[in-house]
Each structure stands twice: as C-alpha cells, then as structure tokens.
Image (cartoon, rainbow, N blue to C red; front, side, top):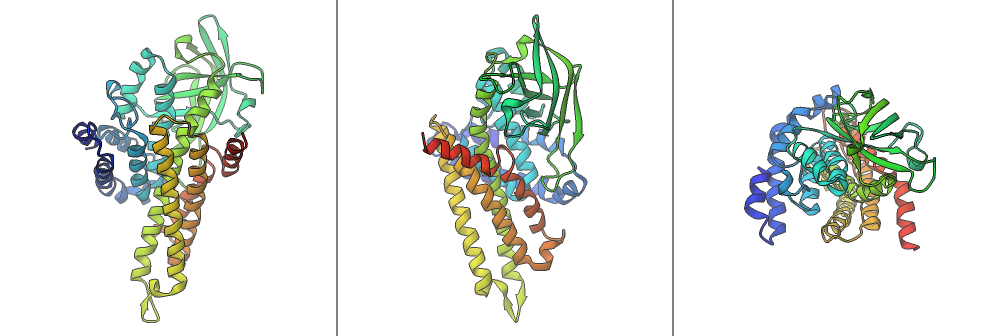
Length: 389
C-alpha cells in the first residue's frame, strides 16, 4: 500500500528507494486489478469508478496532497513514477489518475482557501470523490480567452451558463473546477475559477465521447444552465482563472509526459517480448538488424523522454518555474509515445493490427498525448516564447 510506504519512508532522503517501492506497489495493483480487465474496459468504454476508489485507498489519488488534508504528501518524482507504471499497463487508467491529481485536485490545493481545502481535498485524496477540470469548450480549444461559458455575479451568487467539452470525468466526476469568463472576450484577466459539485441545479453531464483510444477514461461534456453557486465556491480572486490554469497546466504537462512515457514503455516491452518469441527463417525476428534497429531507436527515445520528464519533475519539486521544461517533456515524450507505438505495431506485423495483442491499444492510446493539455504545436509556442524572452 502506497500510504504505508510513505508513512515508513517519506522522512528519509532516499527518494530513489522510495520511488522503487512505489513502482513495485503500483505494478502489483496493475497486474491484479487492471491488466485482466483492460481489453473489456476498452471495448465497452467502461469507466471503472470502483478501481479509482481502490487507488484512493492505496494513496494514489492524492499523491501531491499534504497529509493534513488526507493525502500522501509526496512530490512530482514519486507521482511521475506512479503514472508511468499505471500507463505501462493501461493508458486510460494513467490518464484518469493524472487528470484527477494534477488538474482538479491540484487546482484546489494551489488556489483554494483553507475552508475549500478542508472540504474537498480529503474526499478527493481518498478516492471517495472523483474530480474533473473544465477549461476546454466546443468553440475554443487553445483560444481559451474567447470562451463562451460565463459566470455573472448576482449578489452573493454567481450564475454559470455554457458548456465545456473533452472533459475527463465530465459525467462521473463528483466535483469540478470550472473556469468561466467573468469579463469581456479576449480581455486581460477575464476568467475566474469555481468549484461546482455534482448535483448542483443547472449542472449536468452531457454527451460522452466515443473515442479512438483511452476508452476506459471517461471524456464528456459538462453543461451549465442558470447554475447558481455561492461566492464561497470561487477559487482565488475574480479574473485570476486563466493565470491559475496556466500554473496548473505546468504541472499537468509533467503528468502527460509521464503518461506518454508509460505508454511508450508498454508498447516497447510488448515489442521486445514478441521480437524474441516470433521466429521467421528459423530464428527470432529480434536477431534481424531491421528489427534490432527499430528497438534501438525506441529505447533511445524512451530514455531521452524519461530524462526530460524527471528533470521537469525534480525542478517542480524544488519550487522552480517549469513552464519551458514541462512543455519540452510533454512535447518530446508524447511524440515519442506515438512513434514507439507505431513501430511496435510494425514489429508485430499482422498481429499488431488485431486486438489479440496489446500493440494496437497502445497505438490508439498514444495519440491523445500529443493533443490533450495543449497540442504539440502549442507546446512549441510555449517553448519558443520561453527561450526568446
């Protein structure tokens, strides 16, 4: 159990040993509770909510949350290690765990007041509640300053109207952090963040997306129609919502880099095992240079992705600005995951195109990593702006 490991080890300086213990614990959970069900969850688009309650009991749903709020009180290095191991088996589970931790939960942790933290963080950290985070809209993806979801103040209340889409846990989440426009379109400081609980009148889940990959991670709309919430549900100051979101996304991109790294590892592991077993012309195909060179390229890019991802995690733990480093890690690791998964399918040949082997699912899952939490093109915008300051 991760929570027990933390209790016994977190006071020591042996973070590498701690990470190894967490990796082993997550591998045990993955082999017992995830791998046997992954294909069925993928085919039926089943979101296994009960699994995330189990992950909460094991300390994985509040890894970055301090112990005073019921969390594991860990850093990004340990958090990355857990995401990688979950995603190595099933990217959907890694995605949902990452979105819950780094977006909804982390937004409240970073910008909530004491009362808001006491109210929400223990439930989120335990897995009793699943969190969602709403920024993206049908008409605005990267153009968040032009969002149409609005929050209008009415006395001590705010009235929300609009829609968010491509939201992880948009239907099943018990609580959502929602960024709504409180000023004029494209004006500076025109958005504010709010915490909205499921069951609040006027807040409903909309259409669930039928996706190419990551099918066991629920992606759906969140709809708001004259949804009234008290001002006490506001996170931070009026107008700070987008600035808060950028800070949240710095950490979120580390999560997606870790997700990408895990998927790449999973595809690579499957390809290596198959290449050693599959025989042609009387010997394993791994002995052919064409296959060996593919595996060499895959291994090299994975190692580079690992170094970038853990560098960003370490800088984050040191309290340093990671805007450039997290974008670099996310960009390179996500594109690596796509290349590695593509080569894994090629190594499997015809079998890689069937659902009897895992390569095709890694192939489908990997592509989202180049899109979610900022496309690869947006990462290049972020990186270029940072280096040209």
